[in-house]
Length: 145
Length: 232
Image (cartoon, rainbow over all chains, first blue to last red; front, side, top):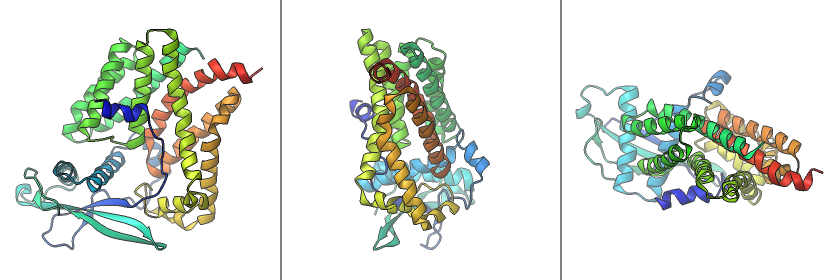
């Protein structure tokens, strides 16, 4: 309890002190490696009206930022629980927003984390985590590799 | 502004922030909804001033349990500030003497100042921030820009350098605003605009509401302490 409370009572406030690698989360329902999609693709444009509206209702974006936090925690300390958390939440989003193709119990989902960073002046993207397949409907625990 | 008014205003603004966040979670995954129901219910109790020691104490327990549920903060700094504001409010209610009640709200005011100042100092110490390159990287590849169109700002290094220095100067110099009521009022307007821009460009809407909830404590703190020293 105290370990969760104390960081809030004595915060560090070191916002954006450095711009580190930025993870993005992708999923695939296919067996091969060619069909990876962003879990929550960033829109091409957001109107000014939408920006104002998002002050009050920004659920999808906040959930996206939370998934990024989950991915960062997983990369920091890859435990089974953290893999479970990220995979199950991504699967929920895919089921809710894209629909499960056919029989969800028979469809597998994998997720991967792609990190973008600047190296020698260029932006480089590399895959830093891939989960094993698990049923899209949820259930079995995946193993990370 | 009296201590009682600042305390009450902070409670109402904090409750609104909790309700805004709770409603988002109520529309989200089923597993998160019980926590949202508890937070919204208790926050409404806080807003209406129903048994503040109890409702704020329970909301504090639920908030800490929610961090455990999400295996960490849901939205980083905004969650920490939310818990800090709530903790200081609750402590200001349960403290045994007037001195400690005021110390609790004064601590919130001090942390609010530090939230800007430290954020500014760590940027000032970083050559990438001073050159504008760090802000360029935020737009180029970080997770924050809310649209692909905003990434084009990464190609405007001069503008970003100027914006970076404006942000650094504002954050580092923020404590000076405490010298006078009028400068603090102006600084809080600029600070709110800063959070609104961050919400529009980076989608950080939760920061707007929770930092706003801290402003009454800072306004009271300046008037109750520093105004007597510097405004003669």
